[in-house]
Length: 503
Image (tube, rainbow, N blue to C red):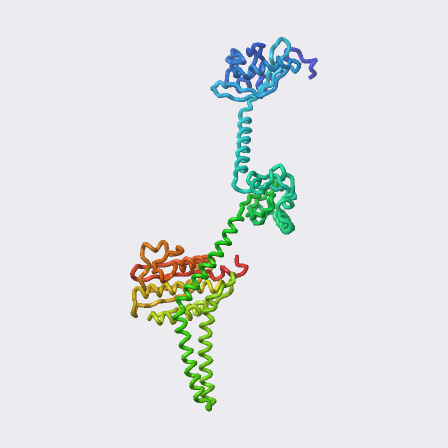
């Protein structure tokens, strides 16, 4: 129906229906701010009834400063003849809320206004603003490099720690390519490959370690934890959090050097302990060689006798050479790489160096090695050093309890295989019936330079070094002891932990 066929009464009725059902507040106020008309939404927004609102002045609903600003706006800008902005109003429940108000002044000085409650939206925006500010503050104050890289590894995010470490201001690096700016020239091709691989494989997380070049030309080693961020199913950025490990790696290298020196020092201590026993062990075949040599000389005319004596001489020479070979192998520096080891040879070579010392101390040495053990991967000199240390400690404990011979002056070496979490492990146990470890010392057994021995018996490095060696091999060393009755030391090693390409 066209408007010209609709009477004025019908138009007014429809207009009132529109106003009443509108989802936003509609009001009319006079020049003094007295409400003249309000719709249902105005009542719902403010919490007041229609009658109450019509008895109120605009200034009673809106704080004075804001109501004055609104009216002043019209006086300052009469040509605009309108207002749009956010004002705070007092809800019937006493709470201050926020509304977006649009108002125009029409003929007669009255105001027609439209209001929409935006309190919750404003609060949500404020929460987001605060969260954003808080996130930026955290990123800025983080004690790590935080970098965001977009397409082609262009820098989108660069925190304050990154600025301090690299010497570059954020404004200088944003939009530039990370690899070209910070990666050493000889590593750029490799790092571009890592970048392409990171994106093409669809990884969400990636860890990497590489050096970066600071503004001053200094190299810093950074350990990165990279996360690929997506938005609407597409790539957004790679967020990289980096830790400067330059000093840590340097300290680790120094620690390894110190440990190597300490291990070598302990070897020298052990060699001093072994000297008397090894000398005795070599003297025996030398005496045999001399005797058979004299017999061969005396019976030079009897070829069969000379041949028999020569065979015995060769056998004793090989025995002495084997002892010397084991001693030299134990004494020299070892390359830092794992090799396959027959456990029987590892234990046997060690015992060949120390067996004479046990005989001299009247110790009954008993060994029990399980047959058919798998190959153990490791560094043989280091593991031999562990066994040697445990054996000499057991000898000292037995000599302390039994200065002379005794039926209970027994030292056992037990070697067997066992299962742990489905994997095959080796256990070497050195058991003695000595004095045991005093209660006060048990918690410090593996501390460096701690010892219950006298000054002439060692520095106390042995068990500390043994602990480090076993840990380096992925194993464990532990003990059982009963003061006055003896101790058991168990060295447990996984058979495959140090094999090449082992995960």
